[in-house]
Length: 391
Length: 146
Image 1 (spheres, one colour):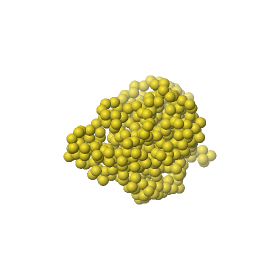
Image 2 (spheres, each protein chain N blue to C red):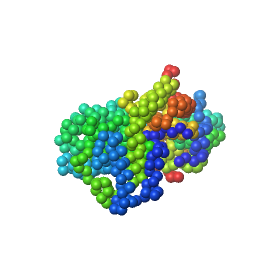
Image 3 (spheres, rainbow over the protein chains, first blue to last red):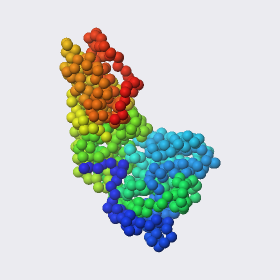
Image 4 (cartoon, chains in turn red, brown):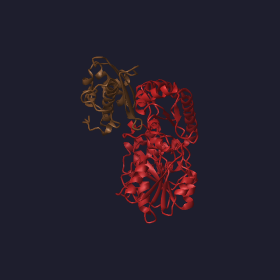
């Protein structure tokens, strides 16, 4: 099997699993316990907090563990909106945010908040100028993702952060795809809140975090016990958090090397597809791009069929076609970069890890060279295209 | 999510292609929704479907329903072909996920559109055949959720 869906989730690193193991078995204490047995667990959680904070240049005290990226995004938007509604009710997001942000913003809209959804250019970039021109006196929050999950475009977060700072507006970034994959620094980038999820960088599923800059007001999202300094209730997920910490440390230590290695495989895939498969369009920014992301649209065909034939060839990938979204519309990200529906339906995302080899990349391109012509030979759109070409 | 039958018709679709000088050609669906089906019919002088071919832009279910629909109408009279419903195509495939039911409607309508084209060309009337519609999702059909 060739696994090229690392943007969906990654394989847990064995070292991460080994770090977690004792906290699932013998060291099972609730970290809130007052006995010595529990302090081993609470110390492990605090160590993980430092490991995670170090990746983004934050203080350990500014890291709040959650159940994952979706919770972190929900909390950041809804928590900040509730805490700041006395100041204003205007929020700015982009059109290519993850549904955790889009749907949280829509939920806030139903509660009387006003949301400006910024468009992107054809590469999927949100410009700082656009953010600046959308800021109003009643703007309380800007949330722009660090890197897009579908097309891999890395956003100019530092410049957007500077704009927010200039106007005194809170800045949140969904860094679920970026954390542990590209350099991030909450100070240099003027980030007030940042979401991350452990399973996107070889950690366990079901654990994430929200970085909250000291002094930022945020109402709790989960009510209950006094965990996470009374800001996020619920029994501490000790093994998960330990795993996230271990994965964060590994990601940070290997960052330069993994970026270099993945970018090389990525660029090889892009180059081969562009030169060997006709009517293919690269989606996302060509250079400001996640090291592990390849996203193409292949004209005249639909994504699900492509995924099924890839699967039959032992290759796991994903698509932004309607059939994979559960609706009749293709990916909102592909539509936001200006693609017409019929082209957006034919998208393919290949997302790599450090373990992805050049040979695997070659095998995938070779498979696509059989699959795409096969689907095109069945496509009435291709038939019409060829007919017009021959006129 | 798909039955073995659906997978079989997707992986090994029957009757893919075009028919030169077809008796009737019907294209339904639109690229916006991600499905377009085109069916070619070769109908003999006794109004029997001698051959049927298809071209489909769409998901696995769309390809499988096109394949199954063409298989089901070959050898049938136009009247019998008209009676092949989306439900019959679905049943023959062992069912479809609820979100894919519209693919079977599309296949049914593609056959109807091709029959309509045949009827127009030959200036005949096929009992019970309605002109093709643009949006199959507007059709009031029994949508079995299997």
